[in-house]
Length: 148
Image 1 (spheres, rainbow, N blue to C red):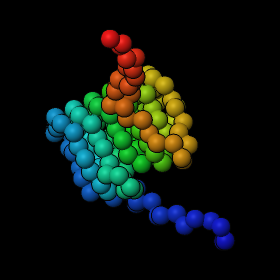
Image 2: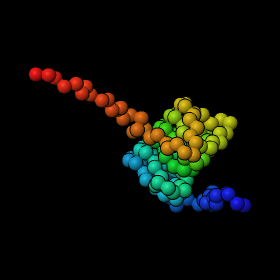
Image 3: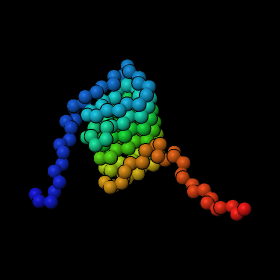
C-alpha cells in the first residue's frame, strides 16, 4: 500500500545468538546485538547495540541486576534496575521488575509485577538512561563583574 513504511521482519522467537546458562554469573556490562537469552545472572547493564533489532529474553530462572536497554525485551525472571524497551516489552507471568519501566508497546501477563513507574515513550522521544537522570544540572554562575 502507498504511504506505509516497510517493517523489518521480527526475529524468529526461538533464535538467540547468545545464551547465558543457569550456571553462569557475569559481573560487568553486557553489550550485544541479535538475540540474547539469559538463564543465569548478570550483575551489570545489558545494552543492545544502537539501531539494532536486538531481543533480550530473561527466563524465569534468570536475573539481571542493572538496567536493561534494547528494542525488544521479554522478561519472565527478576530485574533489579530500569528496563528501557524502545519497541516492545513483554512481562510474562513470573516477571518481577524492581525499577522503572520505559516502553513504547507493552504486554503484561497476570502475575507479573513492577515495583516502579511505568512510563510510555512515543516514537519520537529518546529513552532516558540511568546515567542521564543522575547527571547534575548545569547551573549558570554569577556573571557580575566587580568594579574596582
